[in-house]
Image 1 (cartoon, rainbow, N blue to C red):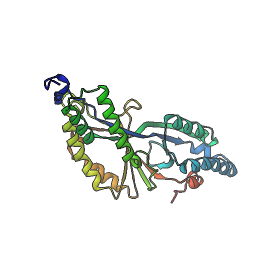
Image 2: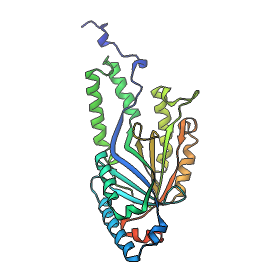
Image 3: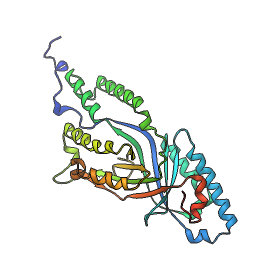
Image 4: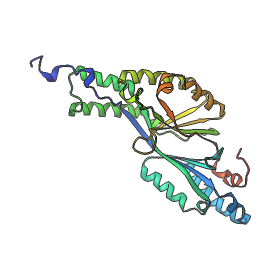
Length: 287
């Protein structure tokens, strides 16, 4: 074969795709609710017990699922009273969870405040760069059949290796912090116009901060581009809520956050096991 044939020439760096590969896991739904306390207190105690018991049975079933769990949290502040977090294998299953909850008599006392739909996501900046460059060096044309086959093989290998992070059990910690975020797109600073190598460098720096808190907080990142109003959702789970402040504050000083991050509303909640639902609705903090 002629060594100067275009098929054998390396692909120029500027011709490589700009989009990093991602791995997707559980479909995820956050439901923030307001509770109609006045109407609830007007019910006889026997009715309150019956309604909360039926809801607790369904929540306990959802907590114990092997293929994606749910958890209930009591929210602090004015943004809502309760938050339900659901992990499921598909959007169909998320919708079924919504429908199951809607059939409860307890639902008569719940008013949606907001919600957030996303998918657990792992970005593969490092693997993407290695894979793209290796294919480019071989002269494989981006988006060709050979290119797509190599990408599919890379994703399959990574997905198997990362399965525990893509399909996690619901962390058991007492506190949760949830917030949505974007990468800034402005006149001067636009994350999506940076070269992939620079985005990879900044994300690696960003990840180093999180890893320093690995023993204190569990972090789950979800992708929501095309699903909701922000680009990512972040769930942090810990037994000490001060860790949320320290971690997020420290991250504000790395370049990717200081220059490009935009944050939505923060939601802080305390875990309420299903068997403590009645206590919570009677005004007693679940311990």
